[in-house]
Length: 73
Image (cartoon, rainbow, N blue to C red; front, side):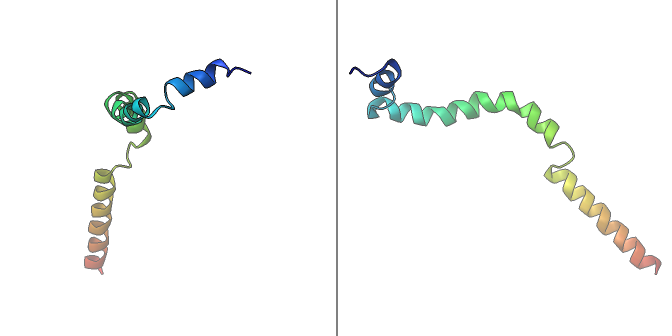
């Protein structure tokens, strides 16, 4: 029985080492170059108010408030 189309395609392209290595190495590079640009607005919307600067500023405000309360006592 002959192999079906997808098995043959896999065998003659991705399953062979000389083509598999460049494909596997190119996927993360292409994702970092193009994929992240597409998802970046969604990441910024999702993380709004929860980035490192915002968290640090809230912590500083909390410390200032605690110091004011200690000074008032």
